Amino acid sequence: MDTVSHLLLGGAIGQLTLGRRVGKAALGWGAAIALIPDIDVPIGALLGDAAALTFHRGITHSLLFVTLLAPLLGVLLARLHGSRGVGWQAWAWMSWLVLLSHLVIDLFTSYGIQLLLPFSDHAFALASISVIDPLYTLPLLLTVPVILFLHRGRSACQVLAWIGVAVSSVYLVGTYVHKLQVTQEFRHGLEQAGIEAERLFVKPTVFNNVLWRGIAEEGGDYHVGFHSRLDDHPPRDFMRFPRRGEKLDPYRDATVVQDLLQVSDGYYQVADVDGELHFRDLRYGQAFEWLEDDRPHVFTYRIVAPDGPDGSVDIETLSLEVEQDRDLATLRALWDRMLGRVE
Image (tube, rainbow, N blue to C red; front, side, top):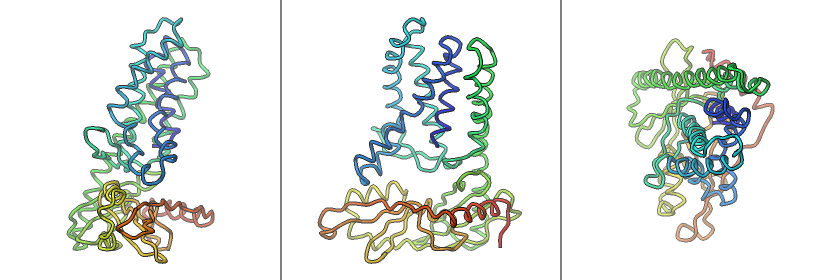
């Protein structure tokens, strides 16, 4: 989830747990602690593309990490605020709840978090909310900052924090209900299109929970379609993407390639681009395939093997370039498609 949402939710939880006893410090520390699991982002950047691939949302997003870290934070905060008479156990409880909230809302996104590390590297992802969804953040944004301007003893502080957490949480659960309903629509659409899907991955498009993207696996091909909650019919038009997995065969024993296959959950496409081998994560694909343009894929990795498959194999993450005119046009097209407008 985005940083602002984590920060606001952490602040609200800090207020609810210790706000009456330590005042605005609880809100501030809650907001700060909520960002700790994402320390894997700068650390991953230092480790390089290959290591960062599995480190992101790895150990720092595990239940073991937050459970071990919470008591340490509790002791530290109790010493910093010793005069307030709040024991380390209370600070640890607040820290654990805040850290856990980070894991919970990330669980509802599509990237996946490795909750059970180091005992299992399975990535859990409910994939029911976009990493940036303004409707999730809005209740927290309208309530948590107001607490900063209220006297610590006012009951309105607690009420506002409860409202922010409750409304955003109800919305979060509602996104999963949407996911279940939309998945059925995609299954009906695939059946009508004569596509026998072996697997189906459904996720919302960016900034909203109205327009959804589905990718179905059939043999060595993938079929991508879109469905808006405002459409009056199941998805009809599916775009075909061949996997071309055989191009990856010489490199399959390389650890980094195994990591790519695991992170993408097997939804991928391999392409030769100007003599280079590119690995594309099709869970995200081009994001807006119905536009049928030549935009790059959201997550693309170049296979780097200067000495061939038998030598050292590495990857390079290819970053997307910002194209203002195209991106603004895409946002307009996204809005139209959300409203069920199909050319």
